[in-house]
Image (cartoon, rainbow, N blue to C red):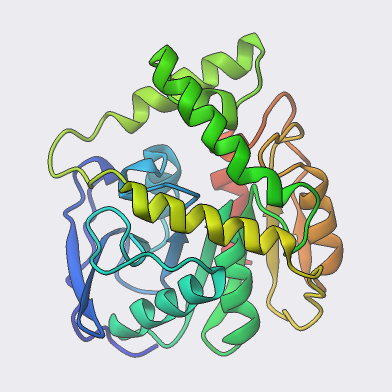
Length: 289
């Protein structure tokens, strides 16, 4: 792996206080944070719809960074990153590749969550020499069951959240059970642990562009994915109402070298946050195998 040209040394502290950096990609500044060991193949994290740097569960990031160099970033137009947000998953993937190469890396691992999982699939297929291993969580293949309904679900949950003053993640990411509600509130508390130098919320134009990209992904012809030859770990909760959980099983079946984590019980789209200890252990084992 080549040495990064403009990347500062990773922080060995926690995600709560990891500094925010920026790198110029074709004249546009992309914000990112990194922590963990300085050696080994970097793990690039690709966030969900409407997510910014501060929407990653610090327990997941810190857990992974205990043994891996972890980099989170804001794609074009998202949070503190400049430019206009693309309205296709392919364009987002191409931006992510440019970001990775701007840091000087010639091989990475990818961890894509939800919409980030769509992006990771495109990168893995189009850049086989760049990507070593892939983790996909709460996501599905292009044309997957119900994915074109995600924008409508997200809009309804956002409106309801505004009216009830409740974070949409509670209804979109977690089951409406006692344990699901506890897990949801616990995640929201963890997401507030960082108090300084927080990322900007996603803008309305960027959110609209992402919604359009997700709908287009859901309406594409079903993905073959037989060309993705990298090992892939696939995870989700058993009751995902955003990207229906059957997509997780379908995704694992389509990928030639996949490993399916047993679907987390009484968990939804945020299953990897609800079961963060188990997920981190499985992810590290997969990445190091």
